[in-house]
Image 1 (cartoon, rainbow, N blue to C red):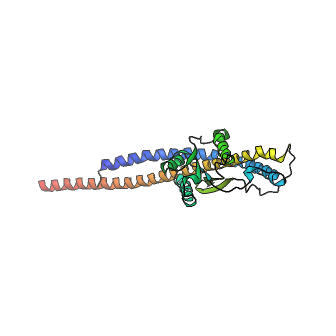
Image 2: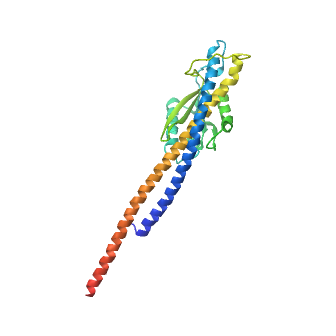
Image 3: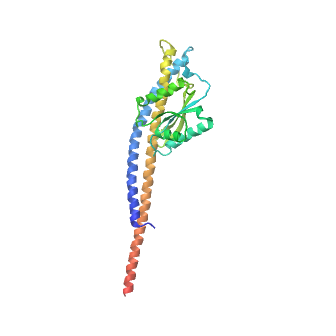
Length: 285
């Protein structure tokens, strides 16, 4: 049985740990509030640019663009969004497992796929397994702006145009609620499902549909990636908040258990001392 000093030391260390996890929970909650607002604020822009792009692409018989055409798939690209750090529960594990299983099932060699890793956890996971990472970005701020990822989104879209890969998918955690995130797979390129849910609008444009689509479609594809990143950041902060809350609650339960153990040990020690005193008195008599 542990001594009173050892039990008290464990109680003190667990209390300090609980203070840290509680502080981390509050920080994640504050970040979540802003990240959720950013993700929701970006939705109207995404819906509008999709509507405009679809209206021009589908409303003109002469409108063509390579990003709209499906070609034989020789190589598949995967954008994988993870966090830069752990302590997020199953946030990173779930999305990495999904990507890894998909690659193992669909591809027989590294030449058949290319990975774009956003987040240090994903980058380290794939490099440790000698998987084909062609682009990476780490150290993004908790509330990223489009400028922060403009370079990698531009490269990701450009690699499709250069036929580095023939299709591009995104894997990330979709924010459902503060306690729920789900792994989401979204096809980015080619833009085969660009049609909006609303009625197509009629727009006047010049000089031609091709000229407009030449500028608009890469921006739309880049916006898909940025929107997914905002969504993933909200899910990341939610996962961090939930994980730290669980850690805080577990620390509290452990403190209660150790306190009960401490009190029982102290009571046993006192009882033993009283017994020895009574025995000593009896011996003197």
